[in-house]
Length: 218
Image (cartoon, rainbow, N blue to C red; front, side):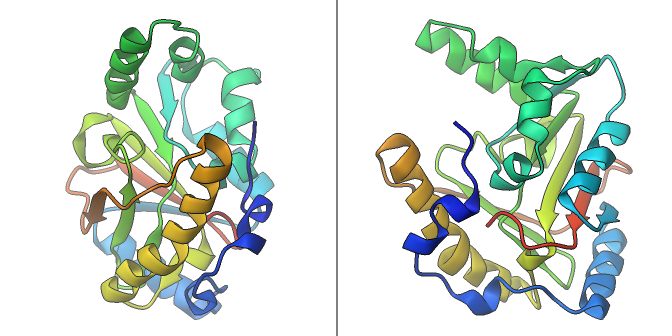
């Protein structure tokens, strides 16, 4: 079942000052610093444009996997990946058709090496760093090295001034919302068990950030 931020945000106390839409000059400065750190950045105006950007960015005949991302849900990518008319090898369809728990877990681990791995991020520092965390690591495990190409999709509401503020956002915005989602979806609490800071992307054209001028995800 698809879940969106609006499904549980009203039941969650967050620091709203770290979840606001930034000024255009802030977006421009963030893009400049991200690109200086080796990330490719595509800026779009809407969820529909973000989905179109992904459709045109990912070539045919490649394997595609995603980590859980509310933003990917909100722009319609998850539905498109699993049910849409495309020429990709959609790994989620293969993984979730496996009945044996151990085999399915092994396939999930293998999927971290997909040709294209897509997911979200919990905070973007204007200074050009990305911050994310996960309970199991299945969402962020591919980001540092495993996947051949990484595409991170984010609303501009995740932009904050500094790396310290990005870490604060993880604790006071992303975690409370994810914890609420996990309890509603799985009946268990989440945790900031595995934390990742991406400061640079040394491999040219490996990591692309699709930045949406909208308040999406958490």
